[in-house]
Image 1 (cartoon, rainbow, N blue to C red):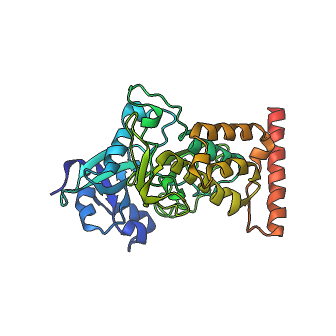
Image 2: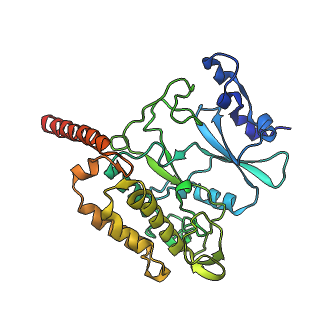
Image 3: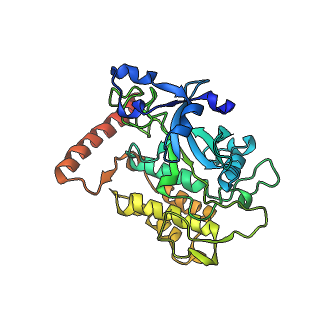
Length: 345
């Protein structure tokens, strides 16, 4: 028996991803009602589908029907919460029960892709990523509901929410004609390779996802929790016995993400972020700044960066000397064109 609300979505079958026997343009014809297909597929928790009402891509995730993830995600999707500019949590479009498993449900969300796919291209794009992800952690938000206060905001989640895998983006500005949901470098029909637009000229919005091991605190409730679950194994205070501050955990994880993805591993040129990262990843949680203090450190750093630097390209650490010469030359030419346009225009 199909769930009635499941009929609002169409799920592409395996031919969509692995190819069929017909012509390339026929791949879009392999469609079945999602309620009929989902129970038959062995999916890895999340799969994409198309919303029949408007043709937009969505992601459908299998979740525990009465679990914390549904409770927290539903709360964050309330209009008075989801509409706030500082709420970067993915919005739930619908939740409908699994007709074959009373303990499970399907949670429908907008389709998103990893925050670094495609790779960021300029220093200013990284600083904007830091601003968005850090700003949302700052306890400065007041909602319409008297119970929605900074420490009550479920985004103050513990047990390791913020890792690279938990931060996604709406890449629609980079791909105005759309792209394939699985073969992300290809067109929607999977025939052509695409070149994304620049985030500098076409800003994107980042979102936090996956609240399966998150915590939500009522006003005045202690933020101390226990548990070792999480993806960041470098957290020094994780314990099943000794309570730790959930907010300070989030600060460490974000700082560690900045360190691993930008300062130390992938790119040159982010030494200016070191004071912020060092503070956020202090081994002693008591020495880590509150989110609003970390945000102030960021803004102090940001004010000292000149516009040409922010527009400058990212330089990968594995880039060879010849590659650097070529790409730097292109970057200089691009900067010259940018300045000329602003002088003439």
